[in-house]
Image (cartoon, rainbow, N blue to C red; front, side, top):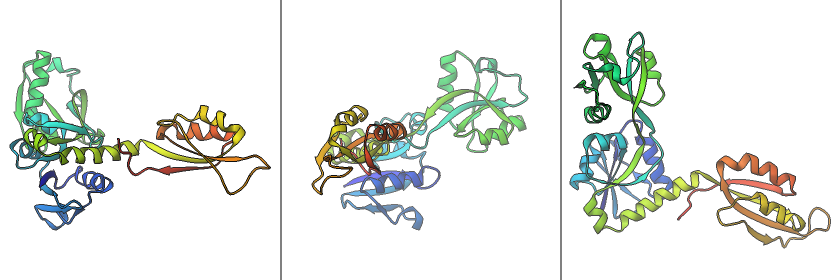
Length: 290
């Protein structure tokens, strides 16, 4: 059996549930019903719900074989785990921030000052690399308030949009650490359980699909070469003869299919129309297996 630790609440919970569903491993029951464990569509894969901050240690210690959590939490805990895959969600930055009216403009200005944070290890490493001596104060919440009540001169805290800093009259003066959510594995479990790589492949297939779209179109045979020049498909377009007759006059028609990057769709579709493609369909892709 493989046990996967995933966040039990917060901003990482719903995206994690969603990506497992898209990967063909929907999670039944679980956090909504305050259960600690849940099953998936695979009888050999079970889910353990835990605090995102605890997941690195759960995986390191073998309480879970696999985990989903932020790279900031993995780094802060110094967890000895294998980072298998960047899941491309939960993006956020740890920023160094000071009060709006502060005279501090850069990290070097904080020599000898007090820095409040929930991430003392990352913060200490950051200032050590800069050669700046500071007093790092660990707090467990409401970090934004500490400069306003005299506890600290600056903070290092998570910021995804900057709104919280603005509300609390703080300004970011540097980025300390950039983070996103990762699939991680216990090193011993990874050696012994092949299915862990199957889980990685399934999640990776969802990520690959999100970046691409499937194009289908009818193309007059005389326009095929021009259409091929436009399409940057993964391994070239698939071309099939349409057997239901001739369209657009007496010219033979071909069905052309291709997979293209989502960001290129607008430009490519317009180019395809100009070189003769018709009846163009743009279809989402659920998964692309490597």
